[in-house]
Length: 108
Image (cartoon, rainbow, N blue to C red; front, side, top):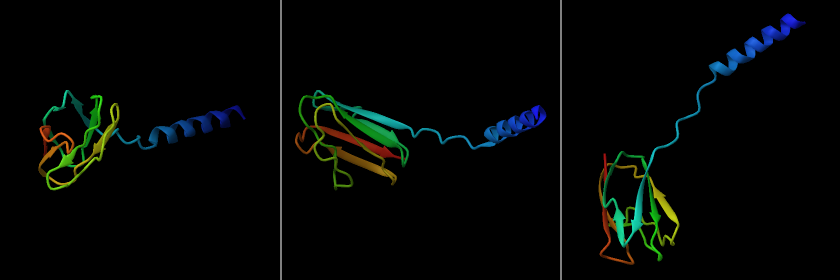
């Protein structure tokens, strides 16, 4: 009986060792909205890479692409919004509430 337990224990550890690894965590890039600016204002990412905008100002902002390829809607203070561009290209964006705020995403 002791021999069987050892064999089963060995088989169980071999099965666990042969299990596929969990997928790697998806990489994301953060843009901070602070002082009425997107920081960084220009960003280069790969298609499918997630971008997270975090609003650290005391009032809402939007992340709205020229041509409306994406639009966050209002992002409240201390809230965030994310987007993963699927297509390569250059995307200018800004805040629809504050037209002086501008940013650029270059997707490779």
